[in-house]
Length: 503
Image (cartoon, rainbow, N blue to C red):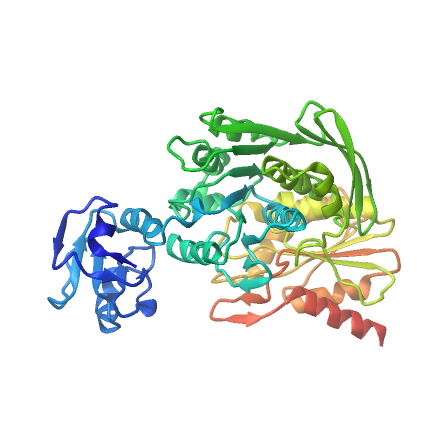
């Protein structure tokens, strides 16, 4: 618990009306979550203005309000006026929670694809080495084996610090955390002190927000500025960059002080990288490869299939090496790592063909799982995919072309249409398929807007030796429609379809 006077010393304040000596029991920007004696911060967003909910916050017992425009409250409630309430939140909240990231080692993963798998691989290795770990990412937050649901890849400052404070209280030693470009630009990780930063890759995504790939890359590079910044409490910082990615140099340039943060690279192309993977072999359910590190080769065996998972493994291995885990321990730990939910997840009901559910929802992600399918199957590749609504429209025909080029049968369907008409989205995706179809007459494709029907159709078409890829939603167990969100899980639907086919 902190006093309001302590909190407001952390940020520029224009004026305070009322007592600053009041004790603050909690902080929130959601009026529904205000507790008696809490501080309510009025955030102005694209659709909602927190100033409009001051009355509700006061009724729930708020002791103080942080605002950027005039508000009317009882004299018993203190009002702190600031120029920018979001900046005030970023300044005050980490202090309120006693800067939890200073009490644990923080491994931050950023990139378009691979963050979730890399995060879980790193946590698994550290757990295998005897450390208590926490995970924060797209799927969930974990404290050991306990799950805490999250709503964004990186939660907002308040939710994030609340989770981190709980992790610190429960004696977590290492937190492996996905850090999105949005969170870096929007200040969701303000006040976090990271120890290791890993860059997986950068491919087209979120251009509705960033507008250009250069802007997107600069957003990711903020993480590398943060881990190499002066004035940090902890020592022993490192940065691991996938040097095979065209934007690797942007991340490397983001490491401002290499005396503070050691810069390392990993690669499957360049033997001079600090970690170099080679002699790679795949099966449908596993990978084996050698990794050269400090002049010595190590033999890796994992249950992860595909080249992209070799990259993910290298990023996690690098961070763990920087945290002092011996390579021999890492190699041993990787042998029993299982796949992450919804990331190239095998659906096995005893059928004579392979079914995989994957979160691939970007052009690069889709291309990677299709390339992996080519490496592990001798039969046909059947892909079910679509694009989300209210997101980057430019990638829709691109994804259609990628699917058409790499698959034998493409089934274009709905993803999370949100406020858009599903049929319109599907039409834009199918336009890319049509382009390739003109040059590839062997391609078979269908447009089936209803996702359940598309999954059933894919499994109906599958023959022994084929592979069915259901792409886009991965671990998600919902579908966002125009007027509601419904329960929908690709894995459940695939299992149902497989059981129907057996009959």
